[in-house]
Length: 269
Image (tube, rainbow, N blue to C red; front, side, top):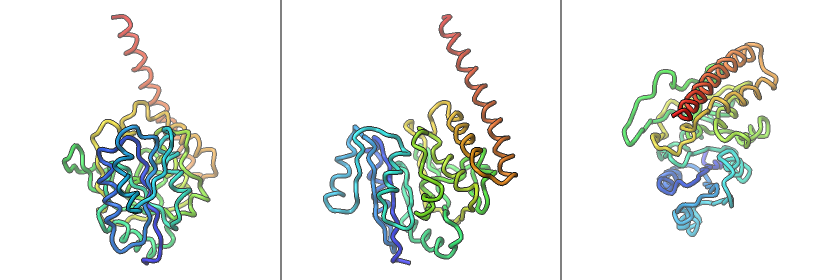
């Protein structure tokens, strides 16, 4: 339904080199009513200059954080500012195909029981298309347990009913990474996710400033798992989360010991 307003939120930090492609892919959406909110999280590059023509033409709204607060805080500011009943996120290094919002809006209208859905993606790494592994294949329905070991929802592919955030909360601003893993678990603990089986996102990877390249990510997944275990969960979900927490702790401790040993060897040379 064209009357439905969708709020598209792009959070960005020092991504002037790719931001225009992301913005243009939102503005090219057809047959849908949307607003675009870009949250500049304290960028120090040419981001302001890239966005200025769009602001002058009133094609989008820009919110500027005077200093970097993190992706969670930036996305949350966009969510709070959003006027749409549906919210869609786009990472500033990804792009949408032009029918993405229209087709997802239709899917959400046809499947009203889903408070969140996503679409399929094309994976591009270093400019070349790659095929995701089987474990990355997106699934629908109750996916809490498989999502414990691997984040199966991509922000750029997701569309969320705005009122869901009133029920589960926003992105955790204390997490510098794995913030989407944390949010999706809180949603999936009691809700199912829909899947539109069409490739409507070009997910671009291979550059060094991605949060997924940060070292020691398991410590943030451990924090997210401890937090979800503090909430009411079905017994089978709690048991699976406890197993995953134990596994993550083991992986993190093994990595920490390896780092300490490596530092000790360097100090001896």
